Image 1 (cartoon, one colour):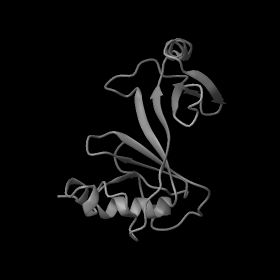
Image 2 (cartoon, helix red, strand yellow; image 1 turned 120 degrees about the vertical axis):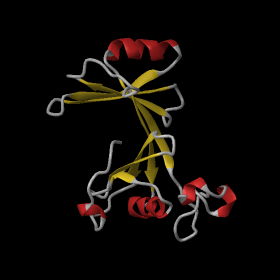
Image 3 (spheres, one colour; image 1 turned 180 degrees about the horizontal axis):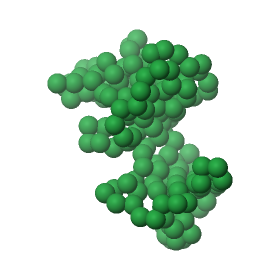
Length: 163
């Protein structure tokens, strides 16, 4: 049984909030991402419940647009709408993307997760981004706070499964 399936927050298990060295881990919530087929309709929907567009990024080469929404005064709790220009239909829950957290040291965080039996689906080969899944299969994006140089074993580690 993996470590994250045992123990409670105070016992050094999955939810302990401690780094491998025993220091408090300090992740920062970044956003929840959902894929959308009609950005205008989705933005209009979220505007009905009070969210507003706070920034947008279009990538012509990658053929996608990222639109970030937030409630006024809560710009640190974002919803990311991802519009893949060529996608026509999402099935099987593929429209829900992931939760994202900024971490102090992505290598230490991934090592702690691996030591607890968690699969690193997309290793932090670039020192910047990794993906893992919760026990229920929810995708979690981990983003490095600042910059770390690529390092082994992460730089040559292959992807595993989907994220």
